[in-house]
Structure formats: structure tokens, C-alpha cells
Length: 265
Image 1 (cartoon, rainbow, N blue to C red):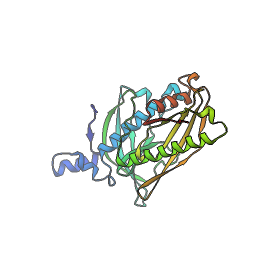
Image 2 (cartoon, rainbow, N blue to C red):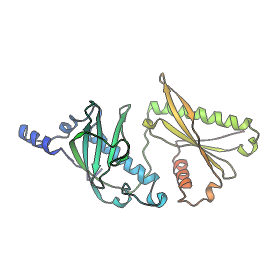
Image 3 (cartoon, helix red, strand yellow):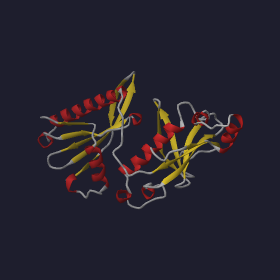
Image 4 (tube, helix red, strand yellow):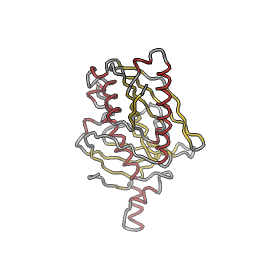
């Protein structure tokens, strides 16, 4: 992204200039836990901000909060990357932006660095202990755009597992006493990030009833199974206001579905 530049934390920068006369990006990452770099933290933050803007814009969420990014579209934020150490030896990576006192928490799974959300003082996962500022960069907040969920052989296996679940759901509906109203139901598989290990199905009947079914993806011995969670239904989904939270999420997830099929019975 244009407008991004890296700066190492003050003390580290002084040390590097004293030793070599040149500051480099890789020197800052030496203080980060394994797998983290300034670049993949910046990428994860960009992804997180876009997801917030794409799925939860102010006009849908209602009352704005100090954690919203909408007011900063077109503006540049300064970001400081911190490593917190509570004394247990477990180092945690956070970032503070010039948008507020809250912090953005970062995690890593299967080699993928991602943001787990924003936390403020007194909230769960707000870090305790000392921290070291290991680097910083600036980021320009862009207009929301469709997320890039990515694809990998591992994610393909997850998709196959969800497809099998969708097939089983259709078979259950066919055997039910109301099979007639479910015949021909369109089935959308919402796209997802591999690290989430969760997905969702939208089942849309001919009468406009939409059923949302969240899915947990469980990995066992390099294969995947699924667990259906408790969902909800929307009556006459296409007649709801487009800024209704349920309708808005329905549109976002079905229009960007990674798979689409039908209950053919």
C-alpha cells in the first residue's frame, strides 16, 4: 500500500545508528515473537480495518464508538507495534494507532498473522506488564472493499467438509415433514479466513425465508469435520431494509460466497 513507511523504536534506532549507521526493517523484527514481522503485522491490520469497514459500517452499526474506523477513511494513521511481557515468558503483540488509546491484538496460527480485535483498558485481553516498542509505520485508511480471504490446500479441505455438511442438511430437509417448502432451496457457503476455522451456510427458500447456520471446523489427523451451531432465520429477507443488520450481513456473505449450490429434491 502506498504511504506505508517503517521506523524502528527510538532506543533500538539509536543503537542501530551507533553500530552501523543504517536502520533496517529486519532489525526491528528480531524483537518480535517467531513468525511475526512488521510487514505481516501491517498486512493483518489492513485486513482487520477493511473487515470492520466492510461488515460493520457506522450506518449499519448505529451509534459510533471511538473504535470505529469510518471517520478516518482517506486519512493516515500512525501505528506503533509493541511487544508486551507479563513476566511469564509469553510475549504478546499489540499495536496502538493514533486513532485512540485502545490497542489492536495480533495472533498467529498456521503461520498466518491476524488481528483478534481491539481492546481498551479494563477489557478482556488488555495487556499487563511492560512493553517494548519494536517498530512503527503509517497506514492510509482506504474505502471498504471485498475482503481477500485467500485459498490454500488446507482451506480447500475445509471447504469440502462444509460442502458435505450442506449436503447432509439438504438430505435432512428432504426427509422432514415440510420438505415441500425446502425443495430447490439455494445454499450459499460464506467465504472465510483459514485461521478462523469457522464458516457458515445461508439457506434461502423460494418464499424469501433465509436460514443462517454457523459452522465450527474441527481438524483431526489432517482431516476436517464440522459442528453446526445455533443459527437464526430471517423472514422475507429481500424485503428488509438494506441497512438492517441481518439483511446487510446476508447480502455481504451471499454475494461473496465461496460456493453456491441447491437442495435438489
